[in-house]
Image (cartoon, rainbow, N blue to C red; front, side, top):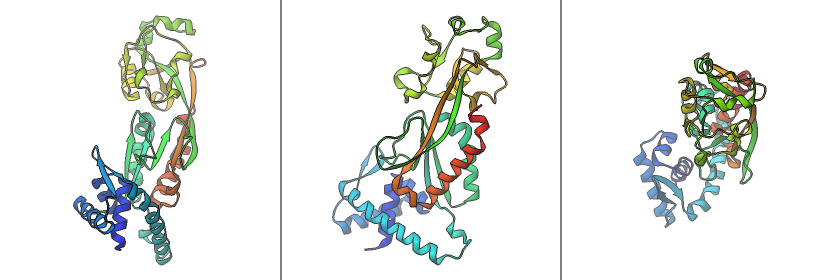
Amino acid sequence: MDWDHLRFFAALAHAGSLAGAARTLGVEHTTVARRLQALEKIMGQALFVRQAGSYQLTQAGQQLLPAVQVMEKAVRGVKEVALPEGSSEAAPAGLVKVGATEGLGTWLLARQLAQLTLRYPQLSVDLLALPRLLHLSRREADIVISLERPKRGSVVVTKLTDYHLYLYGERQYLARRPLVASSDDLRHHRFIHYVDDLLFSKELQLLAQLHKPARFVFRSTSIAAQYEAVRAGAGLAVLPAFMADRDPTLVRVLPQQACFTRTFWMSMPEEAKTEPRIQAVWRFLKEVVRERQGELVT
């Protein structure tokens, strides 16, 4: 059996789409489709089923994948032995999908990950900075940074960092409204929050610990949208310090009482431990967070 067929199969299983596998391998998507068809003809059965635009492994594909991953690891081992030390071919290459919360992904990671691709020209990064939980088991991402520690599945998990959130208001808005000296004074103010029915983590149910407004003047699934609403002077909202503290128009409200600590957890599939491209991004993310601690816990 042609090893290249299996290599294309593994890339498609990892990426979940022809376009993603093509980017990883540096070929056209039609080449990936042709290789898959050839392998399925050899195997005599379908290895993928297309669902909502993505390629999901069939039972036969799921049975084949672990054996192919073992072969991939062996091939990498041979290459590492054959390559001279410092060879550019040893640099991480291929696509890595990183899932993160919207705030962390946009405010702290996007620029850094883009710079990583300059360091490693053969590396591609998909940053999925979304206000929802991404699933490693569904191959939605290679690395996931979440607010809740994964409790199931064969995954590697590490505590990435704690971070602080505070209640914020825009300076001119606060100047026009009654002074907030205690939580009782919050009843005179307007509030911005998540859409409760679409809240993707119970870890974000913060405001209720401080004050329960009769209504919200603005709600959004997006923390970036909430941030913009606060900047517009629409009301108060709980925001991450790493977002709001860099904006001179925003002020912490009741900083002693309205200080919340949450944790970011980073996880990857157990089998990803041997993937050089994923390991490179994993280590880099830990370095970035370590360097930006002053913005996260302040």
